[in-house]
Length: 107
Image (tube, rainbow, N blue to C red; front, top):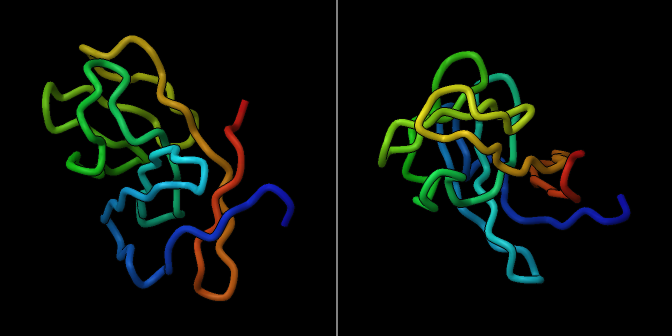
């Protein structure tokens, strides 16, 4: 698929796990297995730039930042629990032959 980059293997990301990866261009992305799908969001919390890879994957497709408890919807990036007010970027994801490919930002 054009614009997608292979960044990890599916076996590196069991259910409920997070994994930070870096694209060829240097962009840091947090991969998340929320049990329903593999998701990709920007690596740093929109509140105070703490690494989301250290956060907790919650039911319902959410991630909670470990620093101040901000929560984000992994499908849309929307901030759903304070103190975050701004969303995180969300990326297109495709899993093919056991490899996680990440594309551009979703709008």
